[in-house]
Length: 347
Image (cartoon, rainbow, N blue to C red):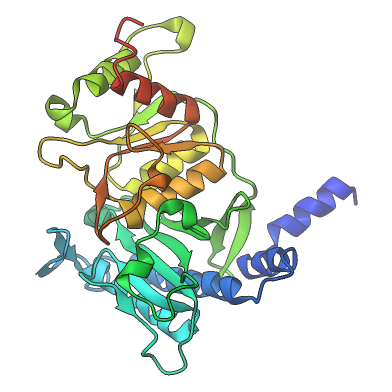
């Protein structure tokens, strides 16, 4: 067998657990705790996937009747996903504090029997859940930090770290196939769930996003409340110009994970700006923008809040929001230039 074919055969059977063990061996100081944490998150993702595949057959559609801390009507699957991830992290013992979009306060785990973990996990258990009933792809987003050395006990203050302090981040897309994508700061790798064996298999090694793209994702229903620079940029992308392959295509699903994943793989720009209704943006800094910002940067892309790098923002609250411009670096750079007023529709 040729060497290239042998490597391909190995890659096609490399499970997530084998992959993280191999990576762990490349870092001698590692204790294996981070690897076990990723394993725990992947187990919860498999459980959520199982629930998702039965949606419509069992009663997981619709709302719980409650409103979450974000002021959004909570879907039954939101709560179910939250419970699965919290349970997995409690059982695993590597996590000392959880922050969830579906819970008003941070959840300390040090009071759990035998819990002495050193990692903080912040997550959106089920992004885009309102789309479940129409079979649109939804996802889970997670962000991982270490408990600071000067904090003996986990606390909200310990969780309020800038994105540059992340030691890991990832997301799961529940779509035509279920895929887990994560980074620990050494590139981005994607794993597809093989339902025949119940394992995530390395399917997309060393993901790199294109330098530029021809797609943008934005809710143009809010166009009238966008700032002038962004309006100009959108009109610029819609303008006919064969030399620069314009006009670009609008692709907006309404599930952040799904839009982000497509743009990461194919090249493009995701935009959720400040609006009159949401002057600080709508997406959560800690649960959505920071983890996906970490991933896109590790894949060669960029993540901005419009005038700077998202991951350098010092958070002040667990559920803080931020504008988002994320994707191919050339497109993010151009967005910032339009927002600064350095470019117009005719440039």
